[in-house]
Length: 165
Image 1 (spheres, rainbow, N blue to C red):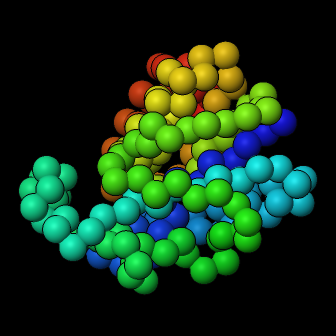
Image 2: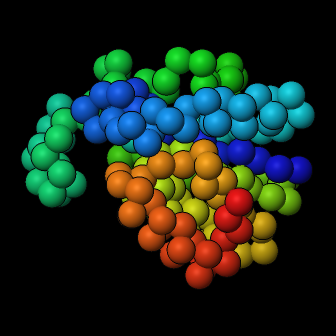
Image 3: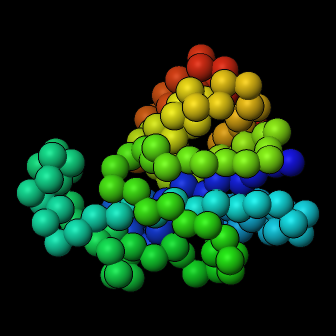
């Protein structure tokens, strides 16, 4: 069984405070990928970058002083048309989640934002937690902070034996 993990496809990363043209460009690809998994009745899990009103006082906020993904705001929500009702959502306060409790799977496919921060973090965590699993990242369904750092993250994941398509 394959699981699709959709990382941080939230409004603030697409067209909000940290949005980029590259992020906007992958939305259609991500939507198609989600539809494939939905049609196959495969499990889809979403993550949401989740911060609070004190974000600027946190270690991350001091290094990235851009307010984003504040819980219960429009920017925090998964972009319209991407969420499949009933799917699990993991709210994570940092780049990677340690809350992965996956059952009955052979393969994990990962898509989302940002390749060079949260996608690579979660891919490496999952690789460490499930070393026997086939983990794949679809690079056409990911975007980084910049195209250059997207490509660097892709190369890092390849070196860590994560499949890249």
